[in-house]
Image (cartoon, rainbow, N blue to C red):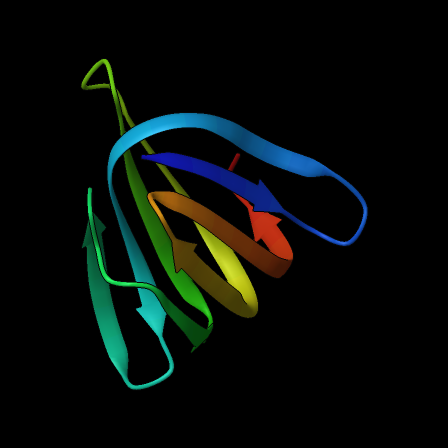
Length: 83
């Protein structure tokens, strides 16, 4: 699946990934390939991404939203630390 991680002023990451774990407002959840379409609000917390090549990346976000549709993930966040 493909992901784009965006803040209001820049693109943080774009690429193909195996999984994404995000801090939902009601608890963390993970997305894998062929996940059902959804939109969810996010709270402050850690995002973990496993890239297609198996490499992992982690960073902390300040609130936002995530949209999943047809293996395309859009992660829209207010701020990012640790990238």
